[in-house]
Image (cartoon, rainbow, N blue to C red):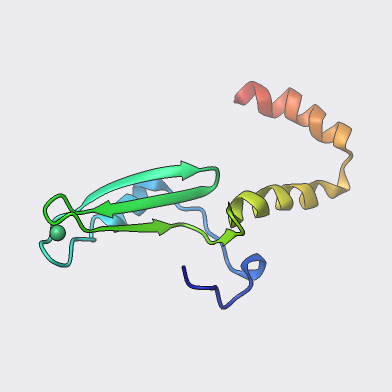
Length: 106
Ligand SMILES: [Zn+2]
């Protein structure tokens, strides 16, 4: 994978809905025969898309984010952003809200 020009923590990030991404990927076809199959795998905040051709067996894999070492960058940056955003409340308040509001929804 190419090294990013912009440092990872300064690069713009987006939330992408799967239906919207699938709509975009429907435009992708095998450059040799025009066929393509799409499968995806989710690893935390990382989305891995694999496009594979059932006719000529060519395959390409795309990751939705770069890695920091062996960890998807989002899987480090997301909890870091939560931790930093919650620096203004106490951990007791955080866990109280998590227990009383968030967990019942989950
Ligand atoms: Zn093909």
